[in-house]
Image 1 (cartoon, helix red, strand yellow):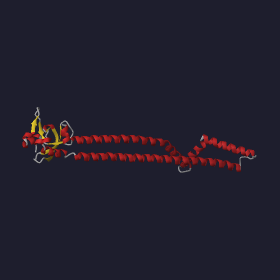
Image 2 (cartoon, rainbow, N blue to C red):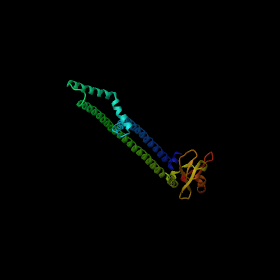
Image 3 (cartoon, one colour):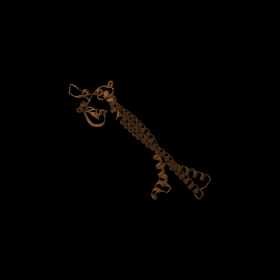
Image 4 (tube, helix red, strand yellow):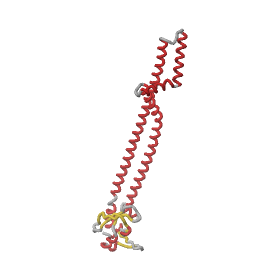
Length: 262
């Protein structure tokens, strides 16, 4: 059956299917591996992007871009921060020490100096929030770039699969006339004579696809035991034109000598 399958293009079609499956397997392996690396890279930036998003939200609320309640909450967060209270306390104490050394009390210019210290620290806090938000935006931009890269990769992956499908389809189509062409050559050359199962009882999915010069119809079909598509003649028709071309197995199934049908 291997010789007959090769003659009618069955072996070529199997090779095409195997090559297509291997190519798709390698493409899929590469795609899945690259997807994992993309996801890992994306996750590395996630904490920084989230921190930046939170800082940007808090900065906007503190400068009044939200509701009055949100602004009050953001400002309270600054003043209630233990670290910030410690810094403000240290600076206030230092200012009081300087005033005491000069024999001054906390009032007038001293009060203005204290307010300036508080304002400078508050503005510094806002600047840090703004900087953190900008940095988070940069990390979010990198994540967006990663997702765009994944999108491009997915498009390329699907395009490659589609290209393989088209190429395999074209290659498969090119084998459909192999059987007729080879049968035509076999019919005119005794050296190419061989016997193949041509009993209609062993075939399914039968469809006429052409004819030999003698007028003997040629069909595409599948054997009962195979999903491969073959091309050949039917023994019950060949015996009418070429009685000597048909022989029979011990089980009574007809075989055609393709070298004898000319």
